[in-house]
Length: 107
Image (cartoon, rainbow, N blue to C red; front, side, top):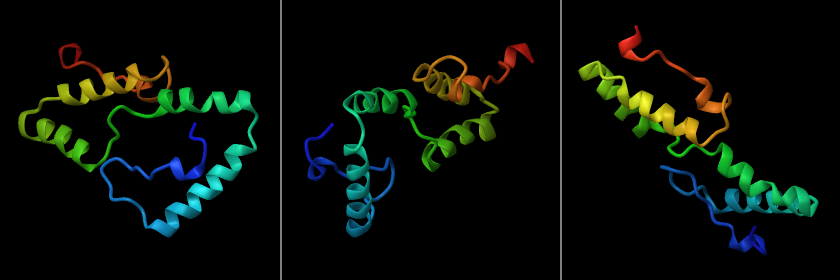
C-alpha cells in the first residue's frame, strides 16, 4: 500500500484517465476508508486484488478479437484460451473458471 494518497495513480485498462477532479474525489474517499481498516485487513487488499483482477479484462478490443475468430473462422479456441487464463488467476469454482464451455471435439 502506498504511504500517502498522492502515490495512487488512476489506471483503467484500455481507457483514458478519468477527469482529475473526479479521480481526486474518489481517491480521497477511498484513502480515508482504507485508513480506517485494521492492519490485518489492509494486508488482505493486495492478495485479494491479485486474485480477482482478470489478466485480460473483457474490454471491447478483447471481445472483438475473440469474436472475430468465432465469426470468421468458427474458431472458439481464443475464447477457451481467454477463459483458461481467467481461471488460472482465480481459485477453482469461482470467477471465469466456473464458466466451462464444451470443447469442440466433445460436442
